[in-house]
Image (cartoon, rainbow, N blue to C red; front, side):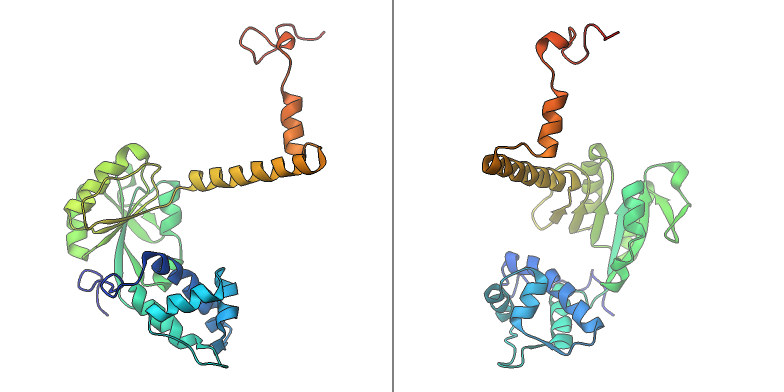
Length: 258
């Protein structure tokens, strides 16, 4: 099997739009579930519904892969799994290093989906000398002093950063200098990288804030519809007190009731 350092995915050279590339893993996940149930073919409508997109967009995306399906039959599930896997580079071996083995890094190391999708965790790296040699997910943690050697020895081209924000840029710079060209960043900060290095950011707090925005909007729509504050809003109103009940700092009553 080829290694990630020797071969690069051909998506950009073949002119596949980034939006389509971003949807390919969704299709692959849905197709894999169908394959596990031994479903031989699937229509564009069924697959689009399973992937959460509309069928016209799915057919357009698949046209970039040269896959058009068969009228009245649909798409061959196994062939599409192979075709998308190949396009995403998942038929190759991609060594990955995870830097920062705290709670999040350890959880990532224990994630079983890496190996089944073509990603091999080559090394776990942490700056804490006390972590060195300790096994996490069956892999001994190595100190950051070994970072460059590990990348060179294992041919690593993908790095995962799960460090605190303050250390992320320095780790990123070292990864890039050692030859890593793709980075998955879990640190809550924006990384600066040179041309030719791809960064994907996963920020759980931002996703939660977006969900909070939608919850607030839905609560506002409920109030507008019936004029009654929903439970959350009602509790917030109950917690607010008048200025005469607050202490000098505005948050503790100046006189406690007897």
